[in-house]
Length: 146
Figure 1 (tube, helix red, strand yellow):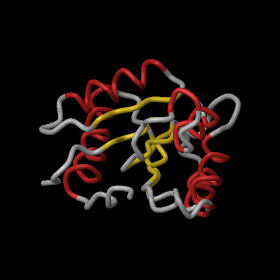
Figure 2 (cartoon, one colour):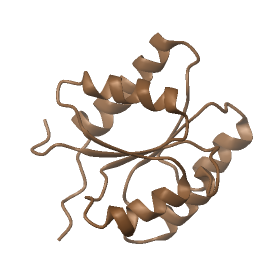
Figure 3 (cartoon, one colour):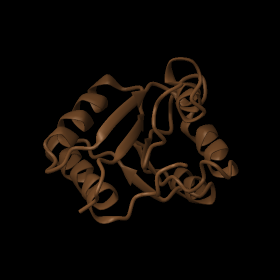
Figure 4 (spheres, one colour):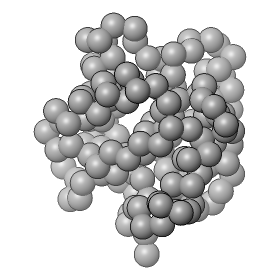
C-alpha cells in the first residue's frame, strides 16, 4: 500500500466517460485524488501549473484520451515525453480507437499503456478498476517533487 494518496490527471472531453471514471475511482479502497481537464491544451496548463492550476500537485498517473479538440492526446503525449520534468509520469492512453495505427503511434510516443474503452458499462468499470489498482495501489509512485 502506498503511503500517500495518488494523484491522477484525467484528460478527457467526454462527460459520460468522465462520470464513469470518477464513480469507479470513488469506489476504490483508497480513492486517488482525481483532477480532470477537457483537452490537451488544458492538460499542458495543468502540468506546467499555469493560471488556475498554479498550485496543483504533479500527477502520479495520466489517463489520456486521444481524440480531443484544440490539442489532441497525441500532441500532449509528445510534449510530456519530450520534457525531462514530465516524462517519468506514467501515461495510459484510454480511448475508443482500437486502430493498430493508433496503438503503434501511442507506443512510439512512449505511452506506458494503451487501453481501448469498452463499450459496455461493466467492462468499462472493470478496466478502470484494474488501471487504478495497478497504477495507484500496486505500482510504486514517483517520489514527491522537491
